[in-house]
Image (cartoon, rainbow, N blue to C red):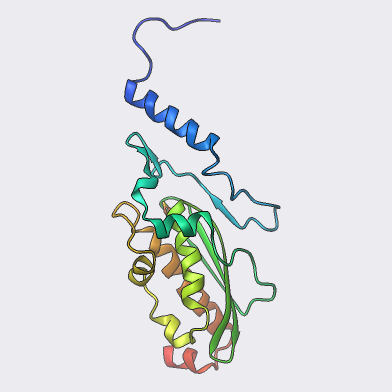
Length: 191
Ligand code: FES
């Protein structure tokens, strides 16, 4: 086996970053959300490099609210025979969010989500389920990426785009519901 001698392959900065990354993974910051089964992938962190940088574990990028939703995501999983399903994907990073809604008349009585994404995407999906539950469809239309960002206490500029995933999933769920119920008043008002 050949051996490389001479100049170190990696810089000291890279070495320190790699050591932090290894320690973070070892302390399972990124492991509690592995899928329990293929059917219930729940939330799965993709541990983006944007979450882990040479500057250190960038959980420092996240406020307590975001970390709480990331570590204790609310309303995870599918709703069987959901009345609406919104699927959103960020084509740049590949993160995915599925939003499930149970709707009674004009009101969202239950919401859940599944995500394969960065910490902010998971937090955004979690907070979105809280934001839409017990809201009317008309009120749900007003949910924007800014509202999601505000509900999370403000994402860092590097992560603010992750709230777009939540807005897109909410829009997609509304579109899905309207396509299934074209005569619903909120669908008619959309025309
Ligand atoms: Fe892709 Fe956050 S980095 S949604």
